[in-house]
Image (cartoon, rainbow, N blue to C red):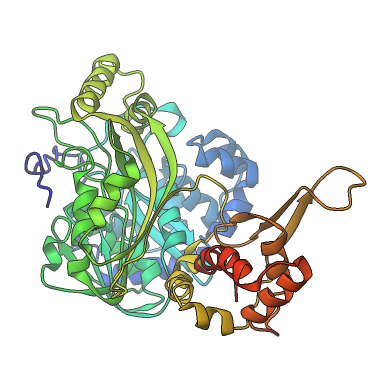
Length: 514
């Protein structure tokens, strides 16, 4: 079991002008705020409509000027709320009182808003969020770097809605479960998703400010969850869950003496030891058939393939594992990404910090960094299934349905030969055939079958495999199809079975059949 290179540093939060008053941010206040946001129609769709698609896209790039211009001249409550939160602009007190009737003073007392010189500004963000089934609102810290403004983030800064949170939501299996754990909840957005299909919810974080904002997010949206303070699995020691989902602080960064880390992305673990700990100990916290889904990074170390390293993390756990590497960054790319994320681009010591990161990675033998998804399942197999793959290609989103079906596909792919051959298989309706060849030729040179859903995998099929798959319509058992094709091709049925069956099993495991 890996251990931290040094204990994770305690948060060293500087004194700030405003802090949250959690006692003032109570249920009645949040219930009134919710009713007002609903009446204002402060939803994702209405915000986009108010700004326009192009200004909204600019806001996603941290540019507010196009949206401000789009709202110019509007004094309605929705425009006021957009200026206050997404645009983070000062708003006249009278406008806020009109948009949030009866709520200004309570929100000032709670530390959500602050007032100076007759203008009100937000101290934390409150952003609309939508799923397929519901509209929500999410508290987090304000977006740093709007309009190019560079300011250091507080160590306990809480990340809001992001591409990472969206990705984790899209890959998390949504089947009904009895218990779910959101490990490292941050602003609480994953718990909002889990509430739709889990009977009991537990959310943890090592950052007290994150727990405060998550509690406000959940209460505002009428979600009940157990919130626990602590690092990784420590708050739930001895407990098991049907589903664990986590976007942990996986960034590999060098320690700096006297400087607190950014809690939302960094820990005191060296390299990718945090990820290794999560993987190795997931089995201790999963019920039978339970799953753990992780969004994270891992090191490519000199002299050892990345998939071999990660396979070693899973070895001995008894878990099925599917690891999907979506992207690989060279060390300089990785360093530049996270220095910019911390708002350090253009800072006086940027070059020195860049060199520190390079030295840190060199000392650990890290040559590149993989980024992607992990699905761990306590399937109870005597021979656990393990797949580690580079898959940077386009996939269907959300990808969760493919992950949810995977356990059944794997079981079917391991059927004995006689059971496999006696079943009538049906190729899924999303599979299309692509052929290439010389114009006018009697037969194509290449036949490619391609899925349009899930991972959108493709197989380069020869005549035998293409013939078998083309006939899989659920009417005849596989054995009969292979034997009939052997007659057409004038080959021995036993030889064709030996050729086709291993490839057919792979396709079964990849979900090609309904």
